[in-house]
Structures are given as C-alpha cells and as structure tokens.
Amino acid sequence: MSAAAIIGKARDLGISLWVDRGTIRAKGPQPAIDQILPDLRRHKPELVAALAEPAPDPAESSVHWMIIQPAERIEKFFTPEITRGELAQRYPGALLVSLPDIVLSKADVPRLAQSCKNCRYLRRPGATTGCAGDRGDLPRLYGASHPLRELPSNGGVDCEVWKQAS
Image (tube, rainbow, N blue to C red; front, side, top):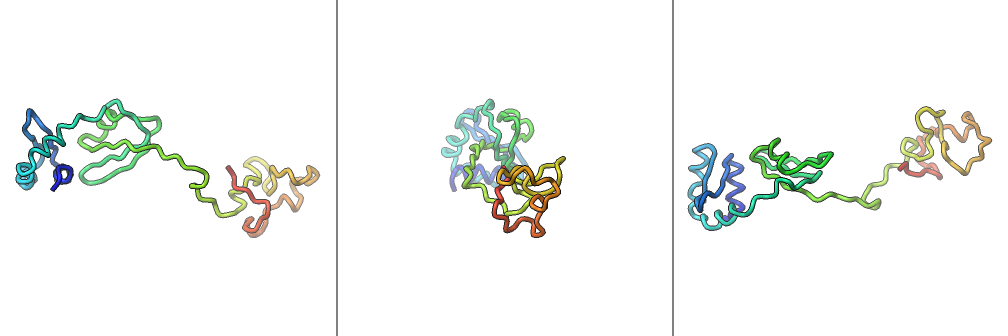
C-alpha cells in the first residue's frame, strides 16, 4: 500500500495524520486509529516523507476548487477568487485542490437547437413581439404587424436566416 493510499484511507476513516519531530501523530476515533495503526507502522518512512512535504501556501487563490472531505467531494467556483486559507476556515480538515481555469473555445460550446427563442433576430423584451428585429435584409417598410415580423408556427425550426444569439 502506498503512502498516498494510507493517507486517503485515514481521511476516509475520519483520521487526521501529521508528523511531529519524526513521529507520525493521528487524531480521530480510537477504533479507526487502531484499525490503521499496523499500516502506519509498516510504512512509516514513506508516510513521514509524504506528510512532511511543505504545506500548501494559504495565500494561493483561485476561483475553481475541489474540496475533498471524508464523506464527499465538492467542486466549487467562487467569485471573486478565494484563498486556500479562507477556504480552510470554511471547510476545516478538508483536502483543498486548486483546479485550473477552464477556457472553452467556440467549438467546445454546443450549438443550441434552432428555435426562435434563441435567434439573434428575435425582438427583445419591450419591443413588439415577432421575428426579424435586427435583420438588415428586410427593408424598414415592413412594420411590426407585417407577416415577415411574426413568429412562425413551427418556432423557427426550419428558418433559413436563423443565427444563434450571442
């Protein structure tokens, strides 16, 4: 069993592990500590090395965090950014992992199903209901009650000039 696996098992059992002057210390329910103690003894050198790694910087900040607690994993976004220290106060004892920001290109964003509801030409709230609100291919002579400005009965599924609203 690896040191990381033992540390994960301890966390799942509700045990906090740390190193104090070369000795592995544990805090948690005594039956759980008794259960994991043989693994702690058997893998002491690897555990001491793994637990003695420098603590993450509490000033590190991000908008995207994975919060790992014994009972659950939570992925959260924060606006504005939140520091590791602030997050540790909200989730004491949790493993906090800063995740990279995800940047999607237009190719990654799925295209919406074609409909009048998501067409850029749909008249906006406050204006007359109907189609072709910003279409430049229709002369200004077509008023709000003209048939070309009415929504089609099929919701625009086969509209030839549909463009996704941005």
